[in-house]
Length: 117
Image (tube, rainbow, N blue to C red; front, side):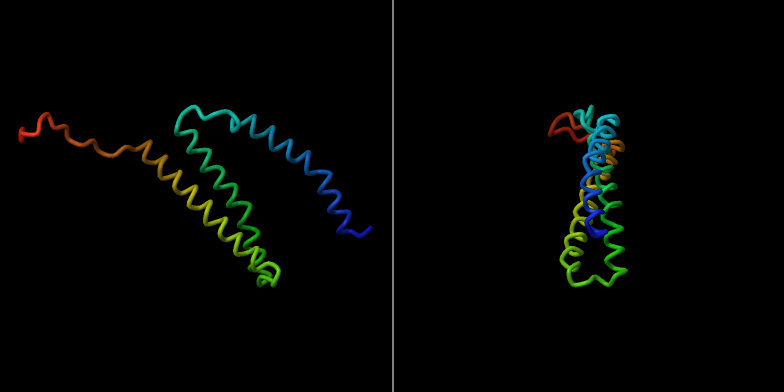
């Protein structure tokens, strides 16, 4: 058996254990329960976007360093699109969280339509 085949078999054997550990970590951190409020839901979106960024960025650097071999060009395009999607997703959640925590000035209250004082 070649070295690459052994590496693939080892990865297949270890993958369920890693998936179970990620599940336990997510459950322990409270990511699997429904959010208690809107702020917690937005924080979760931001964390997911940051993790996606940490996963896709090394792939982008690796492909750029290898000058994107032909087989990697389409993968690199999809990697860039995924990074853009998660950047928009996380940025939108961060903006909504900011607006939720820092509401703008309240509009003046008008008592009636004819009152101009």
